[in-house]
Picture 1 (cartoon, rainbow, N blue to C red):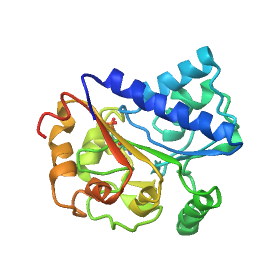
Picture 2: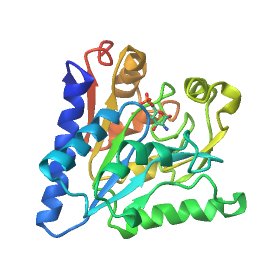
Picture 3: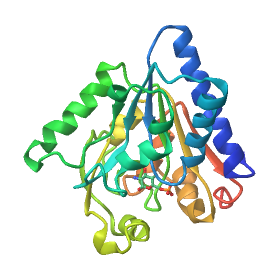
Length: 244
Ligand code: GLP
């Protein structure tokens, strides 16, 4: 779906998420959301916070699983995705802190493998992701599933692509400060979601959006695996869709 700007696209996604949360509430069920970081979802979170404050939207039945975290990364660092999520969403809504799951950037290396397996198991225990929100990196990564990621991959540690580190360099005040690794939900984890929405705004994303939507399915552009998912929508603006 192509919107004229990121604001109107974000409002429609927030509306869909709110409708899902309320539907699950009326059925007395949890709503399991997979959440993303980066600049793309910020307006969606802003709108969800507004709905909570002005319309009484409650997140009491919401369970969240974030896609990824840098590794190593202290959760109190301003660069952590833990910090980002609290700043933009969790600190402003009535979610139970016990229902928030974000990969930990401080798990000891020797425990990391099992930690990642357990992350996927926890998602499964909650009945799987009802809704997964995604952005996209210039390499075609979703979460931090860089080129070469297997379509059936689970949550795991990954080495970041050089382009991804260049893109993060500005906020880290230099590429040398950008961690070389991350923990990410796998492509297989994401693809099990019942519903997936990917957001992409701006000219910067036009070329990777063309490859993702019109290109052949390849591990070189991991987001192309979404073509195989039967309930995925790409939410674009005029700029990110200009090469389609
Ligand atoms: C990071 C995140 C991704 C995100 C991407 C794009 O790499 N791990 O989940 O999609 O950035 O970020 P932005 O939305 O700022 O373009």
